[in-house]
Length: 329
Image (tube, rainbow, N blue to C red; front, side):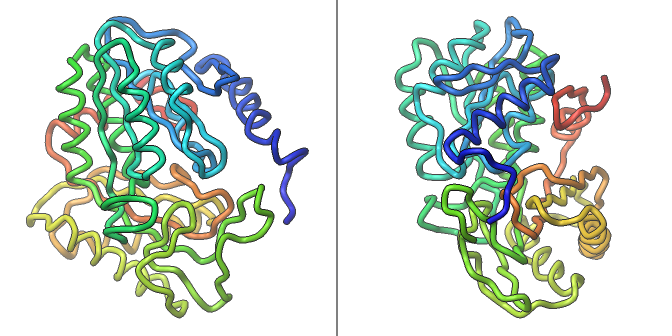
């Protein structure tokens, strides 16, 4: 294993420190326990908090700022954050209108965020993201996993919270966006967790993992490598089967890299996926291409489709200013 590491045990704190220093105009870092918040605390709004295992950068700390998150709680690599992180983050950003947790549907994340919510001295609610249509049940979840669609939920809910909307309205929008979003991932290589020092799974040069999870969990099947058009045909078919969109539906198409896939390939995937969705009567009117929910150094990508309505489109388009996502400001 060759990585830019000093000591494995120090990697997370050193990385978080570098992130906070590089974006000191937007975020502030707390250590022991680890969490990050907006540099300038917002007032009189629902505070939006997310988090999860590290290794998916820029998710979640990269989305702290105006129009998205108020705080993020990073666990160790692919490991859930702990309730004390969530409690202290909530206390730091509480702004008189409650706390909304946005939680990817993994057993450890769900359990620890639930424990934190029970201990909070003020009102809270939770949105579970579950956009991964590749696997219905796995060791890590009950039902679908939360993957790249989480970014869309965080963006739309964060926008609504900036308007002063109440906690239940923010929760309802998050659940609506999640219900209208589906994702499917494909891996060409494994990722390597630094503490393990070896690839999470073995895959040959002429194979791919269809439906892989963002921690390297097995997908729907292992199969032979094929041309990109054929791979993305299967991916888009799975998404269409999950969402069952109507003819003429407008949609946001997110092509997400897993960390080691060149942008050249991601835009090729976008080109193919957009054409295929258009052939099924889906109007792709919003797009995002890049590394937004990664899996360390995995080569691969995911396709996410979110079916838009006027409300979702409004909140997707609204101004956002975070380290990893910014427009309209």
